[in-house]
Length: 322
Image (cartoon, rainbow, N blue to C red):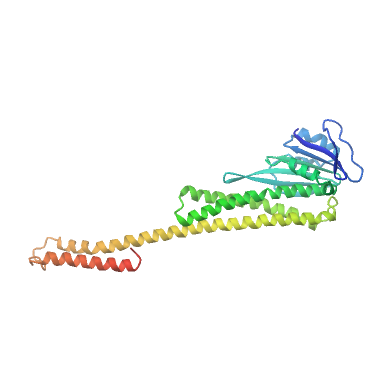
């Protein structure tokens, strides 16, 4: 079992570290709670914790599954939540999973695949005992806010990539690899939005539902959390729209380039058609043809071809076809 930390707090101050290989102390005094942080435990590792805190078997089963979408469920006197963490690896977003059990006097976190540990967050909260004394519901808000704040660097990095590709699409034709990258980024944004929607619903439930584990004085913090989530959603929506516009702009510019090339080819074909037609007529093997034995016939025909071709060239040039 990978236990990052297991500690007992009283009035916002750390009282003692808890050894989970020994009997877990019972907490029954006001202002006391236990915070246990675990990283990728197995089924047996959670057994003693499940028995001590009377965690629901279905919640424990879900906590061991790293593929759940964000959700919140009430099991008796405790809540079970799942949040998804995200970090950018190249052009792909990789996700982790954080399951949280919350009761009136305990909070248990189970992380899977997340690169951002809660150690720094725990240290920050322990440095502010006047906030930590609010109890497990405040710690729950801090963890969810920590998870949501991790989305902003991902969106910032994606914005830089998208803006660079937008500039590139205007300056030059996107090749196959760049076009494939565009669609990859858009697919990753769709997946991110599939995560953000449920986590927005989760945050809304703290404000709209009566939950015994959440005190009313914590609601402003969850309202701030909901605002952060909506900011991420707004920026992700804007990025998806920008990617769509980059694809459409690239397609329009390519159509314009192809249209310009087509017009140039048509103009040159029209110009070359005149001498080709005249030369084709005089290339026929007839004995009696006009100007066939005229002394200046060759020069007149060549001059006529040059004059017509030059006139066509000037007209096409003025029309913007050449």
